[in-house]
Image (tube, rainbow, N blue to C red; front, top):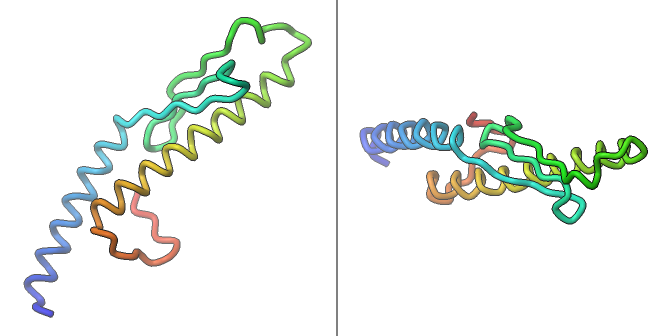
Length: 105
């Protein structure tokens, strides 16, 4: 393969990766649990942006259940964000397999 062509492709990939990282900072994904009673919003870097709890859950005797629902909603949001990130990675790399464990951000 032509070395110059490979270098050009690597530079383009690096540029697209940087653009994707900028997009991930603005990506927002909502996860929910308890049939929508607890909603959590995270960005593409998995930073929690918002937590919304239905007022019907705000009873002292329900505290443990609410805590569990928050964890479940965060897990849901993270899974959705990871799926969107994976789809973007496939788009950027053109389906090229990346080495296992390679973290690009």
